[in-house]
Length: 469
Length: 72
Image (cartoon, rainbow over all chains, first blue to last red):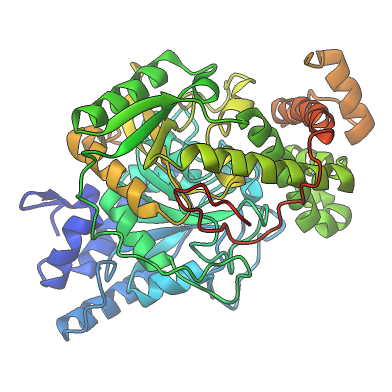
C-alpha cells in the first residue's frame, strides 16, 4: 500500500479519518499493519520506542480484522487500527517488563483491562513501548533498555514515563497508544513529543492489570495525534470494572457527540501563578496565545490562581514515594540489584517517610483537593502549560528540570481530576510545547470539546517531526 | 523556607541512603531529597490547621457538581 493514498498520508492519518475507510474496505488493516511494522523496523533503532515488537501477532490480528470486516462484522472505529501499549500493561502471552530488570522475563497469563478492551474493539497491537523504569521518572532514560529518544530531536528525551508511547505515536509508528499517568506520565511526554495525551478522571478507566506505581495517583489513558482520536480511544477504554476497586460505575457518555460544539460562551480560566513560575518564556507565550485563540472563538477567558498548589505538588510527591515503596518493598529487600541506582535510591527515600507523615499528607490532600475543586467549579476548563520546560538533551538536562517536569501536571493526579495535553507551539529550537486543559470530575467531555475547538483553530497537530533516516 | 545546601543534601543522602549523590541518578535523588525537606516542613506547617480533617482515602473521585459539592 502506498504511504500516501488519496488525500491522506497514511502513516500520519488520524484514526477518525482511517476508520470509515477501513469500514468501507478502502484501506486494508493488513497493509496498514505491515506498513507500521516496516516503519518500526526502519526507525526504531534510532528512537528505541519499543521494548517488544509483536509483529507476528499483529499481522495475525490484522488478518482477522480484515476478514471480519469483509464479512460485515465491523466492530467500530478501532477495528483494524494498529496501536501500541506501554510495557506496564499485562499482555497475555507477551513479555511485560515495566521497563525493569525485575520483570525481564514475565509473560503474563492475562491481559490488563484496557488491553482486553482494545482487543475486543478489534485493534491491532503492534508491541510494547519503552518507559522510565517502573514508571517512576519523567525522561524515559531507562538504565536497562537504554534511553528512548524524542523524534523531534534525537538528542533529547521524549518525556516520561510513557516516553515510548509518545515517541511511537509522534513518529508515525503507531496510530495511538496507551500510556499511564501518576504525576505527569501521559501529559508531559505528550507535550514533549507534540501529540495529544489524556489523563481521565480517577476511576474512569480500569487499572486492572497495570503495574502499579502509586495506587491512589495512577491513571490510565490514551495518547494520540488528535483530540478526536483521544475521544475515540477513551470511549473504548472507559467504564466500570469490578476487578479494580477504584473503578467507577459512573455512566460513560458519548465523547464524540459534543466534540464539535465549540467554546462560544464557555467560561475558561487561564491559571496563573504556580503554573507559570520558572516557565520557559517560549512555553508561556505559546500558552498565552492559545488562551487568546479560545477567546477569539467566543470563550469567556479569565485569569485566576488556583489555591494550595505548592502543597498539592509536595503531597503528590510523598504519596507516590510511600505507595511506590510499599508496592516494591519485598523486591527492594530481596533483589535490590534488580533496580537501577536511581530507582533504588528513590524507593529507599520513600521508606524514610513515616506512617504519620503519609497519613498527615493524606489529610492535607483532602483539604487541598477540596480547595482546588471548589476554585475550578465555576469553569468549564482550566488552561495552563503542561510542562514549564520543553524537552532537553538526554545527557545534559538541567538539574532543576527534575522538579519542573511533573510540577504542572501532578495537582490533577492528586485531585483525580481529568486533564488533557495537546500541542500549542514549537520552540525556536523546534521542540513541541503542550497546552494542559483540566476539568471537573467525570467531565472529560468538556475538556475534549475545548481541546477540539483549539485544535481546529490551530495547525500544530499537523506539524511532523523531521524524517528519521 | 531555606533550601538545604549541597552539603546538607550529601549528609541526608549518607544518612538515609548510605551513599553520596555523585553516582548514577544523583540529580534525580538530589531533587527528591530537596522535596523531602520541603514535605517535612509543609506537613509541620499544616499540622495545626488540620483540625478534624480525615485522610483522603483511596476511593473513586466523587462527582463534584458546579455548586461546589465536594464530598469524598
